[in-house]
Length: 483
Image (cartoon, rainbow, N blue to C red):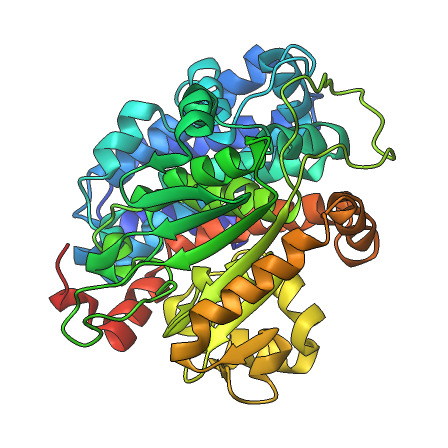
């Protein structure tokens, strides 16, 4: 979160950390000038003028921070000085985005006639507003640092995305843009239809008798989710949804070769905490997962011929192409794996398996689970799971609030066949329509947008917090783990 550090404390904090008085004074003057403009005391000017004022604040602040040791090696005084620079700068960015985000978004998307995915949007905004949002080159440079030594460049990305999502017209447009099929899926579609197979590396898809099985093959990391799997999974979901003869999608984890679980299937072990600790997980990956990958299962995709604009009516029914999904849980579904169970239509779990959202131990917001899990288990149990690390064992009454069926491991294949036969045998003519009308009361489109506006902002702060690092070292022995 952004702290309100009184103006009279900022300079002394920076001087106490050994920063040069002239540079400190220049930064504070730039910040005062920016606050005057963006705070409305002198009236906001043009985008160009306001951006110029904010740019000076961002660049001078970053230059001051760059003089210090890396984040994990700073003294308490140095950390307090960084806070005195960053928090007022972030607040200035919030004010700037509040004034100009609508105009910026409309300009880059041709008033909404062009759909930009969130990564492309952030890249183009960084080009339009250099020195404010981090450039692609700056973000690439950041990947060379451990998470504990990153100074929060991605936080300004989170503030911008949150500002977009907070405005109903452009926020809704961005959400719709993320529901469009990926370019990679469109390029692979003809071959996928012809062969019934797609090999996306860590994800494989196979079609048999109208059912497409999507299998995660990140065996080395117990089928965890990370930057290497999110995009292939989204492409796989696109292919399933676009295939004209597929009526049902099945999600499953592969057999792993880990000594502890050798020869067993694992659904998903959650986010790859080692990659996060070592600084290899991008903030945008969280947005991909929760604005595209999971929503495409839950809401479907927007067809390619859907014509959009900023001025599209917001109260019309959703126009998505969607299909039913079944998840097959073996061993466990942790974190992001458990999140997947909340967006599919049916869950078959093997006896002895479990589901969990270890958000407290990790230091993250578990996607959209804070809104979805209470619908399954009630708010009291949901809070216990998210805030107090409760585990749901499949064989218990509480576990059966998430799993539709719990079967012995040797009965899993027959249970899956029976489920598929029952679903496909019904014809599935009304599946999409029934899903749409259910969402009207459970998760209407605009409520989803509002949730994402808060999520985009808060997750940026969570993912770059010192508490996250402390959690990973305390609960996951992160220092000793290697990629």
